[in-house]
Length: 192
Figure (tube, rainbow, N blue to C red):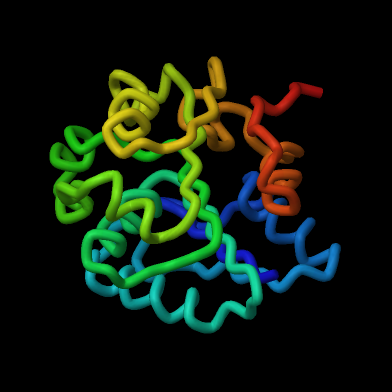
């Protein structure tokens, strides 16, 4: 099994973020994991990030390939799906920003998700969505914006905001459990 963890806009892979901790925990269990720092996270270039996604996914060992995307990396995955560039066994999209949010930010306007069908997304693997109802970057909630239109299996994380450090998302046991067992449902992390 290989796991690719992809961060979002303005993310410099900070200490204590659930993605960094997930990568460390998986590596500690002997899982091949890639958690790259994508180029220019404050002013990303869609084409450059697509190239990095394809490269890192191609380098990931099998037989099972799992991809975990957070925030802008979710819309990156959707762009790659629309172009037929990617395929994994399982994909987790966590807290994708809304098309309206992306369009309103000049640095990420190119990341506005393309129009695509549920069938096209399904061709990229078994895709799961995990998001809150109060994400400041996705008015209306990602389950409504992406989940229903794209036919995605989804887990609601009540009160989890953008599922980032600001919302208290350091160690997140259920995302680790899902990486190891696709039958696990994602639940909010428990405050300690």
